[in-house]
Length: 91
Image (cartoon, rainbow, N blue to C red):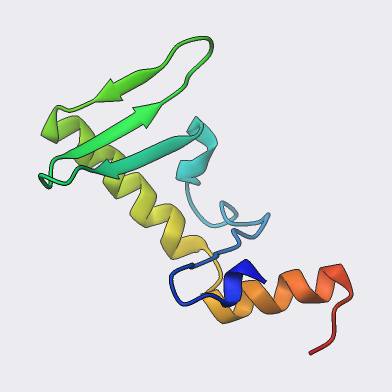
């Protein structure tokens, strides 16, 4: 239901995403943030701590990893179709 909203993009990353190359999502969760002042940040929670990274060079590395993960994901329509099929929902 949420994936049908215009302001939501849901992308499913297939289990075999790293089959033909490095899978950049295996290094843990990350959040990329843009402030109202257009500052780009990366937020990580490795182990038992929180890290907010503001160094542009480091944030760029995380943005590149995110771009690779996104490129390996199914498209929005394919992702929604897969979710609906796995949930047993017919359109």
